[in-house]
Image 1 (cartoon, rainbow, N blue to C red):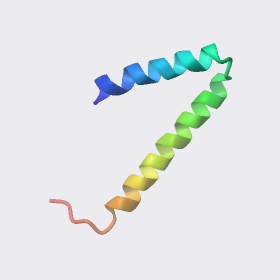
Image 2: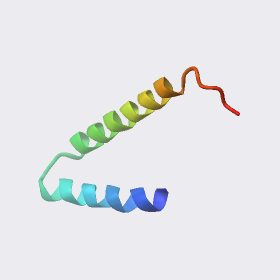
Image 3: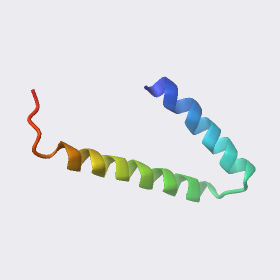
Image 4: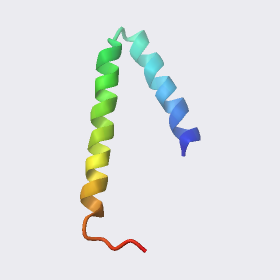
Length: 51
C-alpha cells in the first residue's frame, strides 16, 4: 500500500509548490484528512468483534 501512496503524495506536494500554496496549508490539509480517516476507522470499528 505504501508503494501506491508515496508517489501520490509526492505529486500532490509538487502541485502545491507549483501553485504557490504555503507548506503550512498543505500540511494542515493532510493532517485534517488523516484525522478524519482515523475518526471514521474508530467509529466503524466500534461494536465489531475482532477474531
